[in-house]
Length: 365
Ligand code: PMV
Image (cartoon, rainbow, N blue to C red; front, side):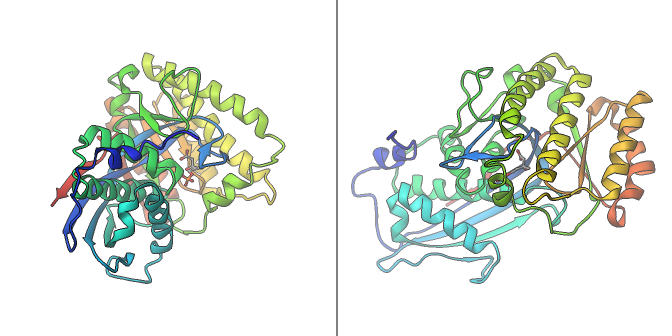
């Protein structure tokens, strides 16, 4: 069995560093991300069945802080936002339990979490990606300080990508700015199934300022839980073909990003979004997540592109539509969004975002 990278924290720990009743806190802001090449289906150990490529968002972030004390009778993670019955708590406790297996120090702490998202619920923005990546960074920051391990922020972020996927797969891609690949692929030699890596060095500067407007077609939280969705790929009749397609689309998308080929990126992103929904619709049981207005928006986006406007769509596992366009055409595309696409949205809700800068440490005390 291979050694977990998280053992670095324990290996680097200073002797005699753990004192009781130490009060420590850490706070991180971490973004959500939108996949261009989708992760859908997994292997054992929370590893992706296909490689994926995402763009980190800028304004859609979770701000999370962790308060920790080292105690003789530790209680573990006890509350979220001062609420011992908070709906996020069970998932965070499950992840905390996994982290405790990796970093035994967590057996000795009582912890509380406070977390807030900058974006409203059920808007098609993955709050698990931003929330879990921020929580992981907080946990690793306090462990680094309690153990006096002296691990650099850069390495901490790498370790966080390794760990965050256990909380929510796509969270591992939120640790880096710009564009990120998760999952082993022959076209990205440094890629791995266990963590994500940034690929910005080979991305054209114009692509690094891509915009993303989220059309809130439905604020109804009822989408497909991703655990069930990933599981439904086991034995899915199209899944073996999907693996080859995802690898091919990753290679093509990376070429498009490198050469600033917006047309090619549009083709790949839309193919990926429609494939994700085709897989979901043809699984057992089949689920239709798109709404009539989702299809109207897709149609309008494609018509506008035929008319010369540079924009494309992608979808998550839900009804809402992400509209992506270059910053250089922001004025014309946003006018089109406001005039034509906004009326298709529930209560006219559109969230304007774009390619982001990755996590930010807010506080370490
Ligand atoms: O990270 P999860 O387990 O919530 O899965 C995310 C799946 C998609 O959002 C549909 C695609 C992706 O790659 O982000």
